[in-house]
Image (tube, rainbow, N blue to C red):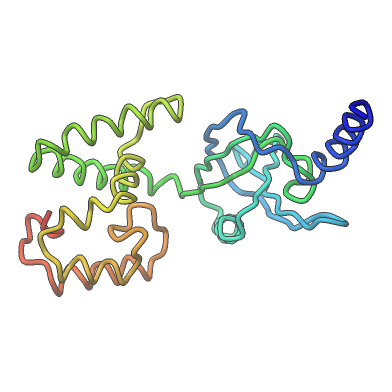
Amino acid sequence: MNKILITLVIICAILYLPIVGWHKETADGEHTGYITSVERTGIFFKTFRAYLKTDPQSSQEDAYCVVDPQVYAQLEQLSEQKVQVTVSYFSWLISGMENCGGEDAVIFYVIPTQDISQREATAKAVVEAYEANDAVRQKEVADLKVYITKTKGREATFSEIEQALEATGKISASTQNSDLQNCLNKVNKDDPLGILSTNTNEEASRQDCINKYSTNSKNPLDI
């Protein structure tokens, strides 16, 4: 009986894993370059794929799997714009045919490279404002730095720290101007300050909120 059960488990694993996969992350990293093309491929399972070159003149091209339709749409738009981007990716132990078409890594986040320094500077200013105004938050930010650094295996960026603060609702808790906060939340409640956004319409709406509700030109976010 035990041999039969073991045999059935093995057969199920042989059939299941190649299709569905084993989504244990084995690696992660970043790649800066140019999205040359994107495509939807597959016979039985339709999957998303993006191609990236570090140098647009290079013959070396890397293929990445994309599982999030929103990320795929961003990549498609950026491939048309021909701008340099930085993608974040991870690798699964077994991706599964229903998710990927044999690529080694999955892109889960993309941002135009030119936006990174500007947004990290904004995030740095936000985090420093938190630290300066609240001694309790100094420890909170320090703990986040340690946690994110351990998780990522590299030094945490300010944008990652700000995102973590935002996820725990600290922006709402820290903003002294409730009208401004409500307006920013209506633009994008998941990213009220636009640290991670590439949407120009949202940027214009955020500026309208600041123009309408901010009472301090030196500290427009009233933090």
